[in-house]
Image (cartoon, rainbow over all chains, first blue to last red; front, side, top):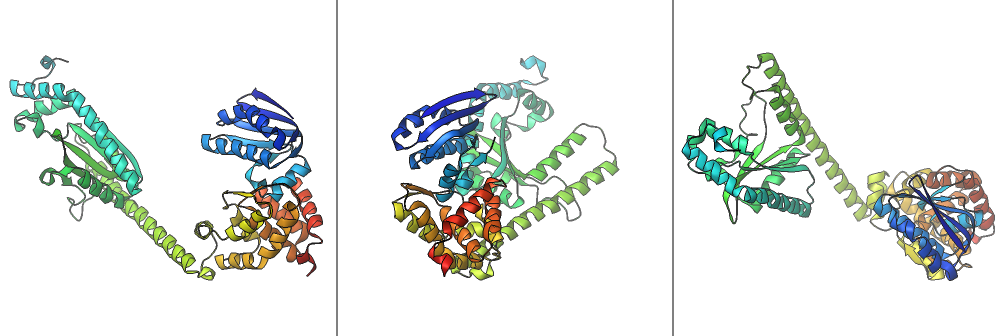
Length: 102
Length: 355
């Protein structure tokens, strides 16, 4: 699982590649800490190369969303695949995030 | 600035000197009185437009002493060295603020003025409540002015028009200002009246919701919010969560107002019936979807979401109905159609679809 963070024009984009499962969740959570720290900005979770998300991954996304809500920022999830979209729907989280297609 | 700048006699110079000596104390009192007011308003849930405070400037005090210095034996006779102004949104709140000021400080009633009562029946003008107060441990009195935003606006306009400028204002302008004061007084009363009616309405709705007379409560944002306080989806959410021993993440359910309107709910009673009727099929959907996964977190919106999905499927609204639901909840997007197809496929063989 790889996480790459790019900052451009006050927008923080995290490019997620691989499977976000319990085994890598701590490592990914640490890698995404800059988004939590700068949650007053627009935060983009680029999921184009994300193939799977577990409950631990959902919790990480929710933590980022909570930080953004507290600091006045905004979270956009970009390009999730159908399987991940179904996970969001099956758990009732789909309408909680702004989901965009590029 | 030296005393020489002002045209003051020795008595007034002594008063000015006393003022300079105590200036830091006056500034401190502005801060502490303001903080006390903010605290008591917050505790009472009273929202005011602003609380302003100031210490009379040396120039302003000197001007006052030049004009009528002989009237004051000591600085303590001047009651507006420290002045605070509380501006409320509603006229009713002026009395609430006054009551809070009365409780916090010792009000000098003899010198306090209620200009709201001072008007003749055929005149309109400056309306404000001024309390002269004392505070424990502070030997000087201070003034608290209380007025509404509209009274404040009028007072400022009136002031800017120059009644203190010494230039005689034509009768026509004075009459117009008076008309404006009358109009603002009516507007202030209307705002308060609307707020009271709205509060009464909310109370009635809450009582109906609490008493279970849900069929009498029309569905709108206010009533839906009251209904959610009864936590009508908790039972189903807990039942679904138990499947995977999942944690339930609380989220805002207000977006479901529009979803229930899509389901043709007109009263809270209609939603209640929907919950009773579709909880079992909604449970079947959720169990099928997450039962064989290791997902151990769900959102509190899963129950209303799956109740709406079950209702749409049972009523035969199919893919189009599901897409409309997702368009409402998630915003319009092509992927909503894909989700609708996915759901149709998933639920085809569930028991409730074949009954």
